[in-house]
Image (cartoon, rainbow, N blue to C red; front, side):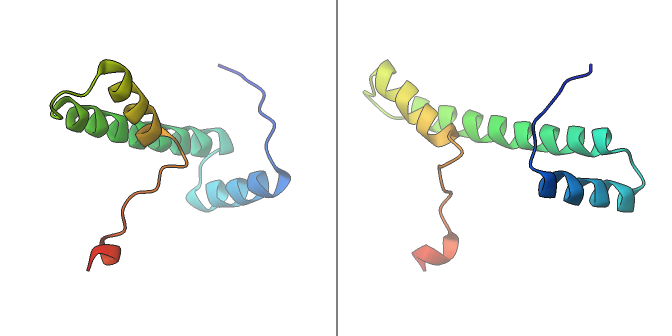
Length: 84
């Protein structure tokens, strides 16, 4: 499928260079990056949903809100060094 994206010039230049180093077209390089990002988000969402389901007495609305917050790009994972 063809689509048009508005991307920053510097980002496109860097992506083109990386794709060239790997010997692949820019479109394939972007597909791989998008796939990786989606898999990461889906894994995080699935993990959060499984954890939330185990919490006793959490109302459905609160569980949905928690899952949205965990899935947000602004959600920061815990740094293991922070807990040492």
